[in-house]
Length: 96
Image (cartoon, rainbow, N blue to C red; front, side):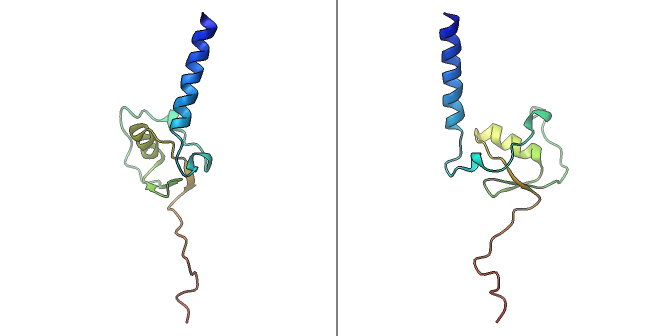
């Protein structure tokens, strides 16, 4: 009986985890945010420490990325610290 209950809970957890993955594979990129260090119920600070998410969105700080993941049931990870780098299709297009 206990083994069945544990199996069902693990199966449910696996299904939920797979359902939260980003469609474009972004959940496999970047590094996991340290969301356990923030009390998201109290809110996030207004300290500007930009984070570029794997969804190519700039979050004002890591806590806000965590709050967004919690609210929207996503798994956006940290692509890099700082602003997102824009990729120009023609890096030398300003030169003539």
